[in-house]
Image 1 (tube, each protein chain N blue to C red):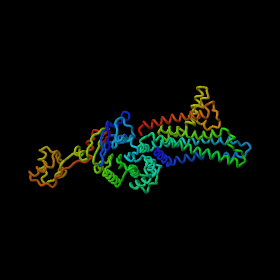
Image 2 (cartoon, one colour):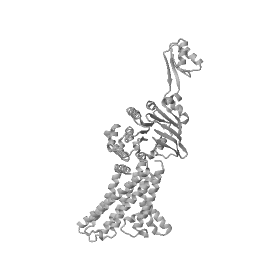
Image 3 (cartoon, chains in turn blue, brown):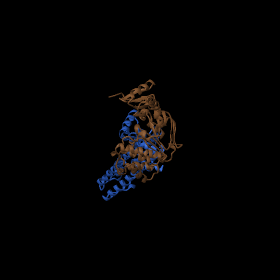
Image 4 (spheres, rainbow over the protein chains, first blue to last red):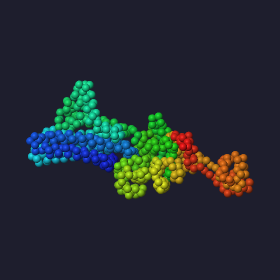
Length: 254
Length: 303
């Protein structure tokens, strides 16, 4: 298993596209948050809560990109045919899948933690430098939401890997992972509300539920699940798709 | 030793491999031959558990592939030189393979030097020609110094020097007592390289034998004769049932009769012989005859 992990780590870090996506995933939320701190800091109506909100909202972009990185760890293998030498070198396919899963989870957790820590400390420093009060204790829901962004990134990466294993195509998987949260859930949600006249169902769409993890508002939106319940629900969806993908990898020809 | 037993693989309605069984012995190069679409590549993928066989199994020195803890030390396989990520360097391609089997990084440099790619180890694979990728594939095969080597069309894309090099490498590996199974469409190369043959058609075994036995069984045999008295000699041989084909004023080829019989007739006629040589068809001729019933894709004729 350790050998499979080492091998997968070498594969991941020797693809330039992964680095590009990683840099964007890290830099984008930090730039937005730190610029917001620089612009808003020192103003009379400065509210540290809005900075935390900016950070947690922009990390959703990081989540999407980390999901794509996770999906590509498997779809690239099928696309370029390297899945065959991979399984010829490690015939126990479950070891390869487990190694990829561990790797994308650790990768997402480490990067998202860096983003959160640098984002909070950096924005605090900037705001305080301009004379504003920027204490985490002043925003009661900040820490759960910030921890939630890290958990969300981990779960979303597992989902990305699962979608990649099921679809085995990079263009299909990336398209699916981008349009699902951004477009499909809006359309499906609209149709659901039209049909049922019950907008509480919106909160149970997987990504909406998952994004509750990183929301400053601990109470579910639209009467949907709370942070914890939404997170568990999203995690179960991710787990189900990943298990489906793992079975497909196990049974299909490489 | 590779033992393939009752291997079958179906893709929908198409039977790619049909209850195929054969053995590959160590110490010799075994050629794996068959027309296009005969199931050679599918068989190799099934042997390595990459394609899930419907029936049967393959063992390598008595062990199933999936049970090998570090398979690169036991079985080195090159199925397609194109199975690489173009954005990765040659060295990194070998490093992830080596890491998966606990092979030291230093071995990567060794095998790159072995195949003559040490000077371009840091280059991205998108800049590699097919021939360079074949060499890289062979480097990957040799990473774990395996006892068994399986190669699917390794000479594709290689220049004449490369083809000769791979022939020398494979015969050298076999000479070390390793089991070497190699498929190729270059039958002239196979004739020079292989000792044993496994010939399949439409997924079924047609023949397993040595190259010599295979050619003796399937290729045509005739006697080439050159003599100032060729006309009389040919007439006598024709009377005895030989089929005579003239290839010059004093030269003919006789089929259906062996060199001994021709020599005796010539002696009886006091005919001077300038040439009396038994001829045998090539491995290509034998292959085409053996697989005539199994050719799935045939040429339409002259253009």
